[in-house]
Amino acid sequence: MKGSVINNDVQSKRTKDFAAVLASLLVYLIAGCLLIKYYRYQINPDGISYISIAQKYMAGNFHDAVNGWWGPFISWLLIPFLYFTSDALLAGKVLSLLIGLVAIIALRILSYKFEITESIRKVILIAAVPVVLSFAFSDITPDLLLACMLLFYLTVIFGADYTARIGKGILCGVLGGFVYLSKSFGFPFFVSHFFIMNVLWYFRSETRQAKKKVVCNFLAGAVVFALISGVWIGLLSNKYGQLTLGTTGKASYRTKVVPGSQGLAILQQGFLEPSNETAMSAWEDPSYQEMQDSPSMEPWDFVRNQLSFTAGLIGKIAGFFMDVSVLSIGIAIAYVLFWLQRFNIKTMQAEVLFPTITIAIFAGGYSLIWVRERYLWSLFVLSMLMGGYVLGRLFENNFFTKTRKAVILIIFFLSFAIPAYQGLKSYANRGRWVHELSRVLERRVTKGSKIAANTNWAGSLFLSYHLDCKYYGTQEKNISRTELKRQLEKYAIDYYLFWGGAAPDLRFLSNYEEITSGRIPGLRIYGLKKPR
Image (tube, rainbow, N blue to C red; front, side, top):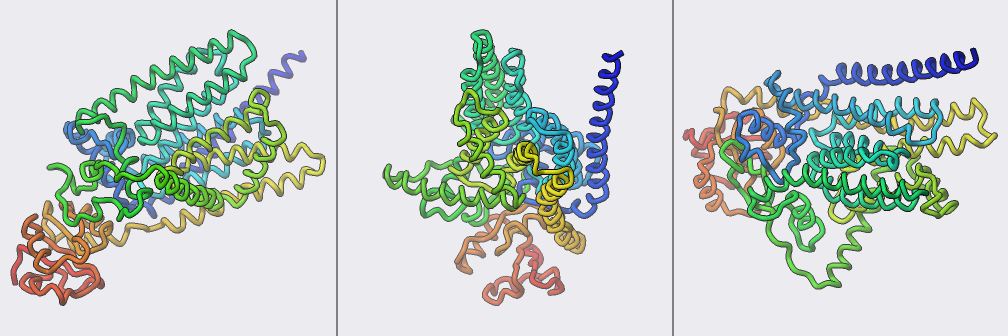
């Protein structure tokens, strides 16, 4: 009879837990469906490239689809959505929304690797809804996909049963491969993280049998990861004629760390032809412009420059965490105290050791090259669980009554939800202006035409995308009038976008029709194949 009561209690708890998870996912989906109309025209240069690559796979153009600059995974996932709608931007948003849904599920599973109460776990799940929505409705980017894959990987490598089953290593290798295919940064991260985590598991294991299984898991995971990543590395290396894991890291280092850099070469070289016959612009694959060798530096100058640059990025990363939640500094301080309290790798709580190591490797890798806030979405989600663990330890104190706990949990929720809401508000209707402008111009601009501009590289790219035209970029700085005319003729540009009003210094333009008739403030478009 007693066993029956216990079983009923367990079943009741599982039912309530499932109901809470289902409710959160439904809230996320309903909110996403209601809000998507405010973000369907959001557009960004990277997103255009991912869409174009997906369309190449659909057309069977695999040679041009293989690309060292952009991870292939998100383009692969886009393919079925592009089959059902001609609105590629909307397809990208729907995909991001669904990836976010899976990320929340992964977060829930990972939360069980932390010793926290069910009430704290529910608050984290509720707070994750606006946070993940703000990620999904920002740029079309693989960073949310990377976060999703990384969360699943962490659920395996953080699990106490990692040393009990050899199959865990294989699963880590598969998920690590997905992390790399999402973004090239995933390769160095997984290699270093998987190795260090297995070393930690080895020394924390108490029996010889457990240590043996850790070694087996590591070898199995490394082999599976090598097989998955090796196929893609082989394709990239064959295309570019040299060993290639990805081409963005080297370019980021050259343009951000090396002194004297003027930025990405593709944005400085003036007009450039699209990357291939079916590409819209050179941004679809900037690899060929960005794969030059880095300038040589004296060893000490290199070290000094790197240290200075990394120190600045560490401060920037800390600021990003504070932007996501003002409690981030409190969570960080609490974890420092946990480390000082028990500075022993073998006995330290897994909830303290493993997340800290993960953040150090992930953020540390980006601090060597360059970082944007979206690069760290994985860590922001992980920090929510770390915050939940801090609250759990805090609530062990008798000072925290039921009422006080409730107040703290509300503050915890708001610290993540308010910045997420502000982010969603700032993203709303972004990109709508260029879509509406393209609707005005679509009868005046012929599809497939060649477009170039004087400035506003991104805005001109977006307009070219909506007009279904080829984009040749913006002119070089301080280019002479004679040279500009020669460049426009060299690339047979059909339409020249002049942002900023009239162009009195470019007299040769007066020989051509200004197709907007001066009706668009701040923009004049000259039809170079349409003489007056």
